[in-house]
Length: 209
Image 1 (tube, one colour):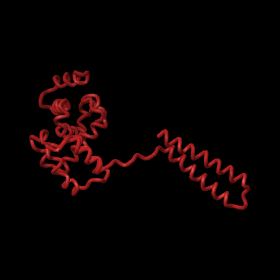
Image 2 (cartoon, rainbow, N blue to C red; image 1 turned 30 degrees about the vertical axis):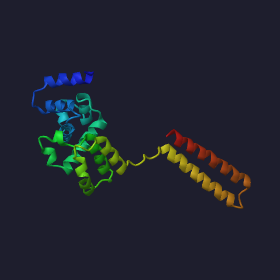
Image 3 (cartoon, rainbow, N blue to C red; image 1 turned 135 degrees about the vertical axis):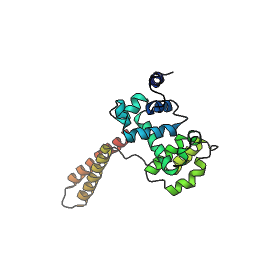
Image 4 (cartoon, rainbow, N blue to C red; image 1 turned 180 degrees about the vertical axis):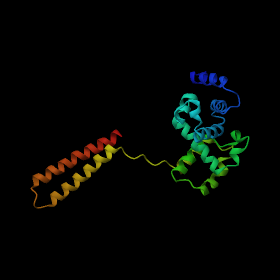
């Protein structure tokens, strides 16, 4: 048993059975099997700010310190449950939803895709049968959906973008100076050399990124 597990077990034993706080901790310890239940409870705690009465300054602090769930994981859980609740309101209210629900890893991909505007309600209905089919391997479904709804490439760092703009501006200036009969060749050559230096710096910035 890890230290986090021991802390959670001690706290669970100190809380009244049936209380919301006790229920959430118990659910968190069964996270992999009952992610829908935990996601639903976390949405309730977040939306009702129940963490405040338990002495935590924020929802994220409560998740981390009491449930040992980091902010990215808590966000994925609440977002994935909200996705399922929007598309399957009747299913999420079934007593056996924890046993029937699609794998968390699959719903997470679809929730992210919808948030990015890649997945519509109509498309979800097209995919629904495969998602709720318990015989469909989770790994295969996740791979299929990741390929169908790819994440956009992250934007380059601000420093790289700025350096690239400098290089482009210098190259344009060098070209204009070279084409002008009023500018001595030595000046246009220095401008071309500056453009080359800036292009090298931009390439180096892209490599570091």
